[in-house]
Length: 329
Image (cartoon, rainbow, N blue to C red; front, side, top):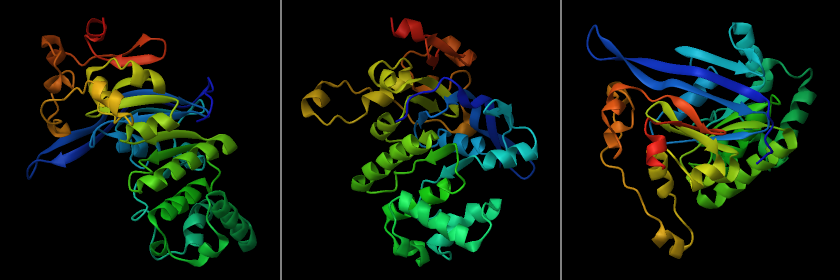
């Protein structure tokens, strides 16, 4: 976990990503996967992004890298808005992604050497085959793979080794920014710690900036400087990693943090679990006003009528809730 730098590398303003879903022969309806999300990530920082499955976390990451073309909103990289195709192509040389599933994100017909070198081939980042080979071996060594692995295929490796191959591929272009999309969720618990620690070491060595998407709240706390909580396509809270665990302000964040398992049985027994009633609504038929109101014990008439503003309650602590001051006294 790197020290925070005050200058933002990535700024996201009012980002929306809607998908048209067919509801009949001639009719469709927008699925609001990401709806009016704003945040920034400072240079050398890790921003953790958490929330239930289907809340839009992965869509934020993919839209941020222009794997999906945003419906609307602005993405600013190192002070420069991404507007033209040339801007986006240049941005893609400096930003990359580590995918969730190391089993499906690697081409089974390509050798490890060719998988890792694919970004080098696309962006033409070498002059000779020898230079390409040297770069691949250097990347493999950096993520803890042996040089003899280069000519083998992905199916010959364990899940942890495959994810290391994916990380080496992500590092090939010397990126400044990496979106980590649940990079340890498909791995054994014993391997997860190794991979998370490697992300921390790489950040220290290379000065990387991460958006770390996960549903394991303990992993996110370990690696993140700040944490953002999403619910049904909207960001509901954003603050310092320790603060959100010790003093969550949004009712959804409170419920989420109360579910974090405690290693000490005595502390676990004292922990007041906050159960949520009902299921998460469909993004196709999201509630009016506050998206969390159908499961919130504090919901009032205003919550059904108005979408709460994502505002700064205290320094660096942002919350989207009409009654946040009232609830937290």
